[in-house]
Image (tube, rainbow, N blue to C red; front, top):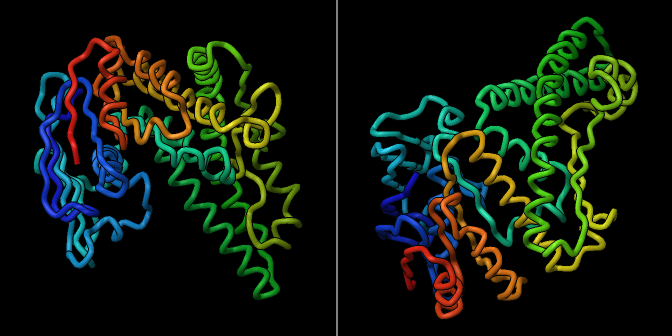
Length: 359
């Protein structure tokens, strides 16, 4: 799969800009603030229908403008594909494939597999469990449409159960039968999600360890540990045993919405005991494992975005990472950096064609 060209209208800091891309390596270089990351985010937008960096959709429209349009021309399995993402103030976002708008954005997820590696990934280490759950969900969803549907359904029922608990507290009332309906639905959806997350991580963790070993030259041992209430008991039982707590808190305190993925290095949390370089290597290994997993599931080389790849990594480690993509197992690569010479020296070490765009 190849992104052949990209055009932006009123997207972030770009009024109107177009690019034609190399089939292998594309580098965006320039000072901070010129829009290198915004171009990568536009490419991400085409795959996921949203920004990687800014969840507020309207803030991706250029200041004082009324809309944005991101247009990408792809070649996938010898077929031309045109994807357009557009948003106008006061209206819903639209994603079109070859001129036809999707009814549900979830139908588009996984069609253009993509992995991004960015300094913003550090949130996976420093933020709460919801960030790590989103990572798991994002990887699984790219190859399993039914998973995303189950997740959407679970979250709807969860919101309804939480609203009911608040209603009970506010009105000093309680209805066990109504609550039981939500308990059964949560259990139905939650059990499937837990099983899929568990199966995914059993396959993913060895891939991740192998990637980390390659990046760090086997200097440290790392691990990912999946924590879930459902590893202790089935959800219907957990919901019943935690009922009094839930009534007091006025929200659902157990379930797959509390799952977490613990990051360890040498048996200790990487957040506390990993150096900046180790944390960055950890995250890159995580994302390269994501790449390997999605490729194995889809049979397609995901597009790989490397945003500000030299941040907190010495050039030797960067060279190792770029060498990892120097084979036919990888497809198209997009890199952003502040130093043109540094980037060009790194990509010259690999035996692939490349293009450098100076912003």
